[in-house]
Image (cartoon, rainbow, N blue to C red; front, side, top):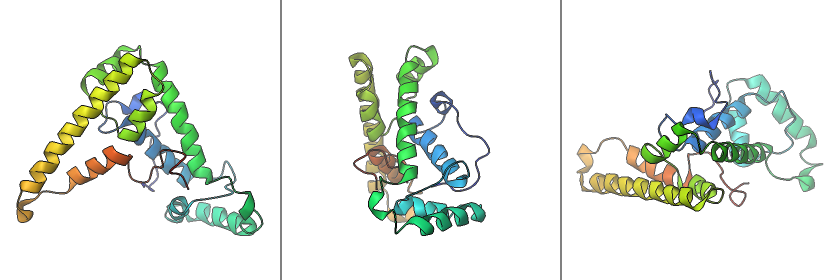
Length: 194
């Protein structure tokens, strides 16, 4: 999880398409970082383990102090009333907005070109996207997943064959993990959330 202050925040999922990796993961990671940095616009009532530690790690200690003080004041009284982590719930809502935004832009030329040439999706976001699109686009998503899977298998096979002393960084392992479960620190389904 990135906790440094973000200079620019994505306003549209389309802004992430030219960058490497799953665009939904990239957008949501930046969204999550921004939410962890700035809590002044709403009260946090509940945090999961991951997001509590994320708040503790933010650069703006005064923000974290306020969040934790508020939670400590109400944690015992509201323990039975929790409806999950507030930040996880916000990320889930934002993910739904971005999926809808992307689906609404499928007719755009730049999106169609991205889907044909440069598309990379993680499995969790590809599955969610497939549920929202026409069969022809769902087939394209399957092709994207298969291409990513084959590329990662080749990278992993090459890494396995390489002598340990000559192995480069472990980027292939990180890309495989991201492909399988999305970027580190993102909870991508209600079933996986706190």
